[in-house]
Length: 125
Image (cartoon, rainbow, N blue to C red; front, side, top):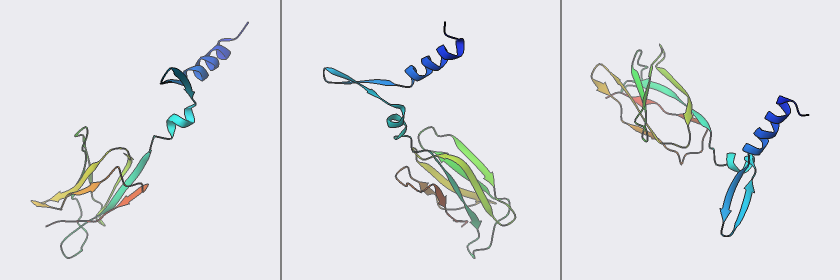
């Protein structure tokens, strides 16, 4: 008689396989093949600067997901730095900063960019 754990492991292993129809045949794809399409996550960081390249403390940095329209924000540190972790590499994002009526240019963090770390400075104008 199988224990509950053995049955659970067998069910998990079976569920991890995907059946794909190819013409009149079906093929099993192992989980590694399915995960190859997952691009993962990246870090987006940089600094908010004045036009004279001085750090801006307390600026709000926005990271907007172009697909879902969800916006994350970060307040720049005493050296003007900002940092976003766990940014989905499979989606495009807009990145910009604002403070005191001034706004930086909007930069695109593209899904076509394969770098795990995206670093960009944002100058307020």
